[in-house]
Length: 223
Image (cartoon, rainbow, N blue to C red; front, side, top):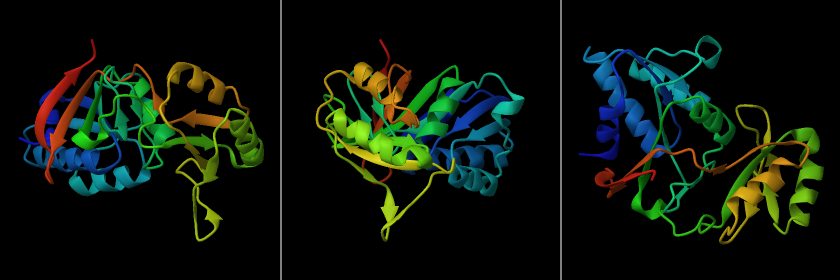
């Protein structure tokens, strides 16, 4: 059984499901689409990115929006780092703000990751994405520098890229983050910062996979 297949067990019939971004989450979207297409389950999805929305439509999953709904039954998403307390770093796929909004609107956040994403302390992979308003980009970069972190603008061929929200991303060079709660507070206090890749106390369950198909090897639940 893969982690995407196991995640299907947490999807209620007629449920409202948050659809995450990234490799593992997209494997779940495809698996969910197969189940919807066979008539075994009826759901509506709320995607966390335009890419996921396109994939969900192709998979035959009916889509809805937060404007029509208050609470989602479960969101299934991936992560870039998971610590022993199920705190996360997300955002390498550049959908962090929508991912956090959809997760916050959900009764449960179910995370799918490969074993390589498990870390003893957040920051182990060296990068923390921060989404910022373009007008505030110079100020945000300066203030992040004052906090002790070098940051680089997400760009291609020297041209800054933008998220689905038409914002920029600053990738902050981090090492082990000893106090993620304080760092989140400090970053969010900077005018122009829309959101960070720190997802603290949000995940309820993490399914861990290994190999090319991310075969399920472990389940972790929030204490």
